[in-house]
Structures are given as structure tokens and as C-alpha cells.
Length: 91
Image (cartoon, rainbow, N blue to C red):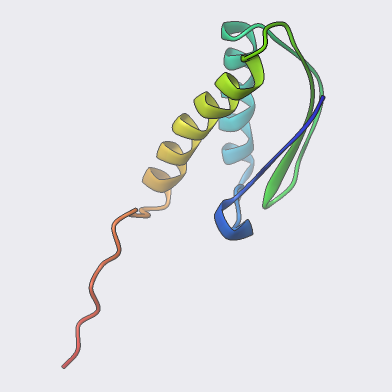
């Protein structure tokens, strides 16, 4: 199965080797946790391609949710991004 994950509005997902390493680490953990075989991957700056075989009907959806929750939190914290829009000050 070919899976693609993109950044929100195709925004950048990875800005450093550390970002890729964090995602790859959680991909490995999630594959074990959710019984998913990962055969290949390509990490691009704004998206990821995965070639996987799920061992259960929900393996893919569960790992993608797992990766999203962990990586979004990591990325937002690392780059001080807030999900809450800040009001602009007008003087």
C-alpha cells in the first residue's frame, strides 16, 4: 500500500535532519505498536511517501493518527508555532 502524508496546506514538514530523525523514530515505534510492515519511505520537505503492508484492517489509520499527534506536537513546540491565531495589534 502506498501512503502519502502532506503538511497542512502543503507546508514544510521537515526543516532539519533532526526533524526527519524524530519522524523516522516514531514511524519505527508505530510500525511495531500497530503491526505494520514498512518496506520503503521517502521523506520530502513537505510530504512523506510510505510503502507499507498493514497486518490489521486499522493498522494504517492508527499509525497515521499516532504519527500526526506526536510529530505535530514536536514540530509546533520546536518551532514555537501556536495553533491559536494571535490577534494583530493595530495602533
